[in-house]
Image (cartoon, rainbow, N blue to C red):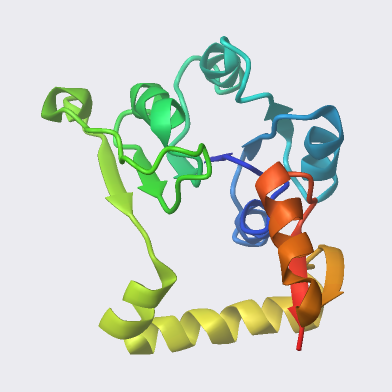
Length: 184
């Protein structure tokens, strides 16, 4: 499994959920050395710098040439395109955000999927509205894992609501390890 932005608010939870679910090998990506170390501390077996021009080759080497079976992509842009080419046969890429700064979602050619590859998107609000029973079960399971201590949400900063602009600055600079929480 490959988790992009493995030190971010969603990524660090995804790494832990994968570990709790019994994923064999979890590879993360993160742009800075401190973030790569943080991703290892939350359960990633290996972490590569997705800004490196050779990150995809590094991931392929880490998977013995096969590529990951599952990629969670909250970066988008060129990283998403490279991820499709990186997937193992029968692999799935789940796109859930575009932190790469580009609002245009990359086009996926049907020819990119010839190796029996699947690309899908995820939005929590769509899951909640479209499949409420699955959503409720998922929230209950995540809550159980949090209460049991199997998953821990790292909080980079807790700020009063009046400092929301500061919270946005932290997020936009990509400086955070884990979550940024606003307290009303």
